[in-house]
Image 1: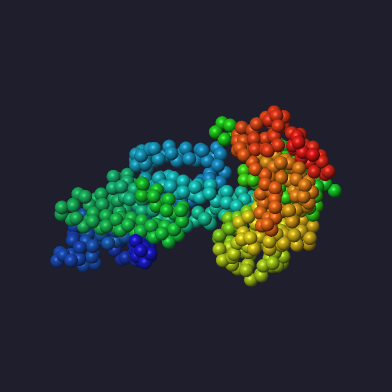
Image 2: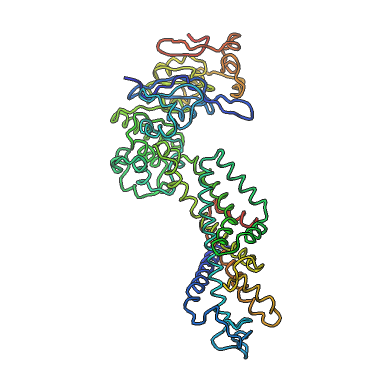
Length: 287
Length: 307
């Protein structure tokens, strides 16, 4: 891909992602139609292009007569809260662990890396299902769970960077002037890790929005009546042949969000092309 | 007054696939205030390892390191940080020694940031012959010689008593090498600072060094005043080094010393003299007995046959 089109896809992804986020967070607050408000007389009304469409509900209504536009935006707010929150948590934890493990090495590094290997050996969805079955699926629980789902990639990537930077001559020089390890990590390792961490964060948002959708679709994620893209889709599957739009809107939003998150990650990776960032791309692709 | 640097039988060994590689094998040396001590030897002889030991950037397995009389080799990582301003290190490759993300000004000020001391960055840049306007530039915008001057300025920031210079001019153009060596000589005159100068090129060091130590396979085989060592090398290896240096006058007749054989593996040092396998003067005793250090006219030599 040429540099120009790579830049275009970066800005397009970023713009769309921002638009989706703003719409979900502001839209659910601004829209007059409350997402939970039922109107049983107006059940399963089709979207605006159909002659049967209901004025004021351009995306149609669901089986309880609730406005699909309001529900898609409100559900998006919940899904994105989980996705952004968990991705941010995963990247924070992963960066901390990776930088410290890579910089200090030794037994700490071996423990962290062994944990990462063991963690990857378990199928995450099974762990998630078991956890939700035991402790329930409140929003904080989901965010914590998905944070655990995403910590390995940022840990591994930042560890590699810390290992490399630690032995650079200019870091040895700073140590030779009396710098503490904390100073070296903060002033030399973190700035080098930051671009890569942002790339990993974008990819992780995409991956976690999908996992949240899958969990909620299985009825183990966000519980109705709180909408999320996953549980709206789950509700809609019953009506696929009569009212396909119920499942179609959240599904479209998930696909769009994931494409944009990956596009953003890829775009940033190309923009800050370094050996570290290209390795992230390979790892993310391998997943 | 105690010497600025004193190494007492320091040794460094690495485990390589179950065997032991001896990089530095019981080296002792002392550097007095204002003195330049040059350590020469071929690649892999352990001189860079020794340089890092002298600056306490790499640990020792045996022996002691004293900075102006204070033993630092036994100090823990935390306690040695308080002593570090005594000795600063100048790296071979100035491009790697400067962070690509820090401006020249930030790099030179970094020792102040780290130690909390205050200092004058423009004055340091002037001291190494750089314009203070360069402070806003990034290393990539400088020439190799300018970068090495920045590295030297940073090393001077904490007013060290000793600079360890690991091949400071080896990566520079020949025309720039002389400039940097002159700068180092001027700085020494102004600041009464001592140098441990690591080099592989006797021609580079003979003009600036007060004393020269010649290293071969982890040991100092000959050590003495620079003029004496260069004028009358006593160890066959030193003779070989001097004979192989390029001459100013291509017509000059030089007695060629032909060596054959390979140096022994540092993983498997012979019981006798380490140079015996290549030495033109080697006899039976060289293969069985390690030569002890001998003092000849102020020069210490490890050779059975030196006279």
